[in-house]
Length: 389
Image 1: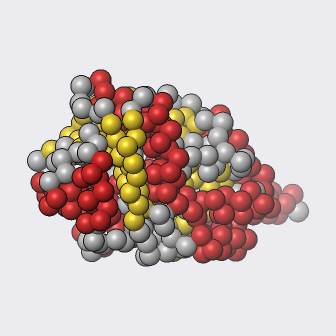
Image 2: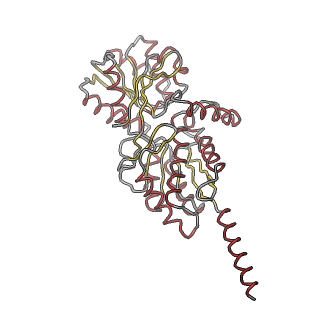
Image 3: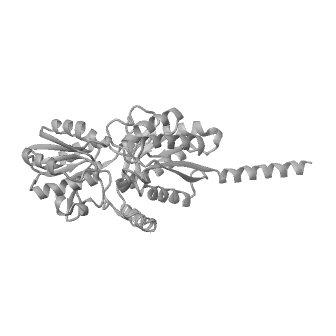
């Protein structure tokens, strides 16, 4: 009888161990694979899969594998809320990568707060979006900080910037915030006169009227709040009309192919970005591996952008928080473990991510390097760099 009891105990322990090893740590990916942001967001999924694969090959987290579940929001705030609810209630996710845009984040972060699940956006940068929430994070830098760094770098390098004009898209939340609030405030802060404004729909192709207005204003620099396609159209029309003001922007136009797509129209454009593709060997190695997967996926581009690197780093940030919190993935513990992940992220200091060391502010935004880049000869070149203030 004693031998049978020992054997039964051994079988129970073995079964329990096997069950623990089979348990998965689920992370949701709220992605904009289609819709408004597709040109800059369509490869985030590749970067997330790369991170999960690397972590799993190295043994997973606390003996368990990471599994990614996905939801394409198409950049729609209503769909972003549905994604949070599905991940938290149906998929048993412990944390969520995304959503992509500030418009989505504003409502998805509220839903995540009610459900007690961490979300971390890879792109949202409109000021203050995560601040009201305890479970909301952004692996991005506030546009105000980025643009202030850009302008300070331009001034330090002696570029002409006695006066400015502002051009912005009216129907994109972050672009409008940049144009109506961020740029005016930062330009005033560093004593640059704003001569006037022009606005346009983000899908505008004909910008002749807006550029005619810029020609009348004759600014030294033009601050832009817009997605990449709109900035390209603006730059080309400025060249056609002979408006020579230098363009500058924050992260909203952080497309790695933008200098090529500009042609010579955008030569000298300066932007701020949390990612520089030539930073070091680790970044170049990531870009090489990314290109292989992107080519196989036939997504139309093979060069990673700042949101791809941000997505990749978010998975590793979650993995580190899970490791520190001793997360098990046991369904009965999901509420407590989601909160433990949040608490570990709040405490994290100088985590060595691919894009540079990351900590988090009290408002949920990342403290990370800002790279000031200039379009030269069809590529981004490093103009200046610093840590966010």
